[in-house]
Length: 287
Image (cartoon, rainbow, N blue to C red; front, side, top):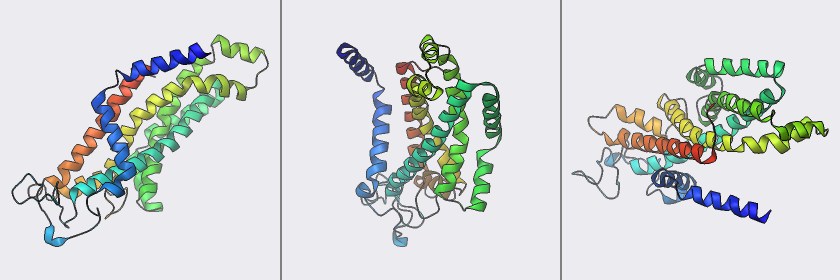
């Protein structure tokens, strides 16, 4: 038992030596910023100062070190809003993945394990979910409950759960044919015991990989929704909302939209690259 634990720890350490350092660093910074943004932002992200509107970044003529990335049309500090916008993206992405991932994984286990009618019903729901545009759902939610973080979380969760369901179902169909599952059933184990003891632990790697990749997609989805005005409402900062606002003044103040766009692209790419590395390291398969 001790040797098995030692080998497991060694394999984890060996894998960490090959982790892509830049994506990993970006992800860590993004998470730390999301947690500590209220403490580390240089300015209040919602404080306006019309006398300081459209200040350029510090490296341009007329820029100031008091506003390193410049200010927007209302004089709000762009750096502070980008940092706080990352916190909003992390919050919405985390809750959306928890909701969509839990629901999708549970349905995937049920569909793969029981098959037949259960599989048919769940896969039909999955097909319907994939056919339903998330933007349309966000519009309907904004009409019924108003735009905001709740509408964005529900919309992104609805977009994600079917991906988990299909991937997990494929893994479960393979697992339930394994000898250790068959032996457990022959010994009289209940379905609940088999799923808890043999199925769930063996799909954990797949779920971890999917989460690491889907975080980036959730951030991108939140940015798209906020760009359309379907996520958090102003003056609360959001990367997509900042990009949308800056488009109107791009020739005059390009920095308003460019810096949040860079933050979105770098963060999403970092999560995707880290997820691809985890897929190779953990041996997870594509659907």
